[in-house]
Image (cartoon, rainbow, N blue to C red; front, side, top):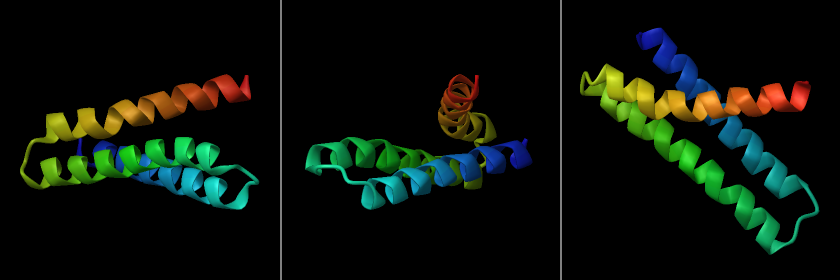
Length: 82
């Protein structure tokens, strides 16, 4: 269970880093960069919350807080590939 939580945390942080990099390198206006920045902040916040819950031995809730965004990311990846 712990390994699965760590995989979800890494996926959330990787997606947040990707969003941050794309918001800074693309030719977006301030509104477009702001719309990309909010999900990145939420992903980092949920990864930190999941890590905190995992340290407090609440593995079920840690999996929910890190797994839900990872599930959405997998769905978006599936849509973009097919």
